[in-house]
Image 1 (cartoon, rainbow, N blue to C red):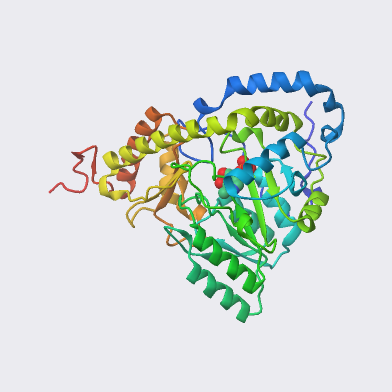
Image 2: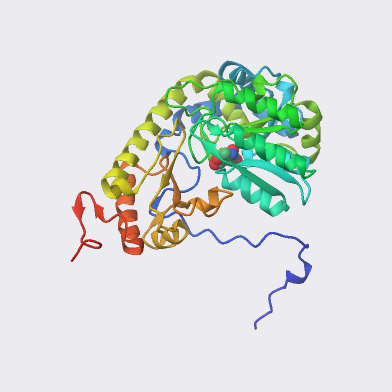
Length: 415
Ligand SMILES: Cc1ncc(COP(=O)(O)O)c(C=O)c1O
């Protein structure tokens, strides 16, 4: 006997996003997403940490929020307070911090607190897809401001703000990833951060500072956070353990004035982010973070070198890129005839996943032949092999690169 499946469709709430696709697994050569290096997850240290913290404090799991209140595990907030002061110059207390389920939840909470359909925000022209998609779904206009090798361009920002003001529009925030920008890998210098703060104050538009890559800088040197430089409390600062420890842990944080934090806390209705993750991070990071991060960064830099070598070898001058100052991504420009949205499909069929540029930009035309490659998660071997496969696919689809691995293919040069 067959029974008809219950139909939920007529009951669905209005305005839902399109349904999610089913997970079909990672590509053989995966250069997508913000994944980290599996070899660099400090597994033994995490095992020892969870063992120690559970033996000592395991019974606190009986109480929501570990009896530390809704803002998160106090020892983790104390660790962050000290780290943010030391590394980013942020003077805050544990009470100014809210632990969230990855910085994606921070993006959602900030957006829910400030944005309504029809609002306008300012973003970097090349920016994090997760942030751009959210704004699109909320019906918010994202005005993209161009970047240069020092991040967001202040002349372009000043014009955008003046233009919006003239049209009677006050943007809700300026979203920036100033310390190892995603996807371009730049770091905004201190002087430019000062100019940004001035513009923010002049136009009454707060800054939303996303600092999730700030630990992964090749030379370990970073300017103070914009939050640290603000004298008026006009900056919301977010960060994450995804890039420095592991993204699957889902632990991020927000530093904001209580006027904003209290609103976000009221919207965070999950009764606290995962407690085990917070406990293990606090226990591991307090003694080990300072030694773990330089080791991780050295490994990432070696992978970047492998990627750049492989691109030079396989694509020659057809692949252009600037050396990122840190992080896990390379932002690559291919010749104009390459449409990376199409390349993405063909490469995937050959087992290579890449992030096509237009998904990381508000300017679809200028990013048409760009792609973003994550070099953290594939092995050195996979990087070399994957780039070779990608070059073969690109040549077949678009005729470039004409040469590969210093071997002329004849594809474009035969008489
Ligand atoms: C700029 C930026 N912000 C936020 C996130 C979200 O990170 P998570 O939710 O894992 O902290 C990412 C992830 O790649 C990112 O690149």
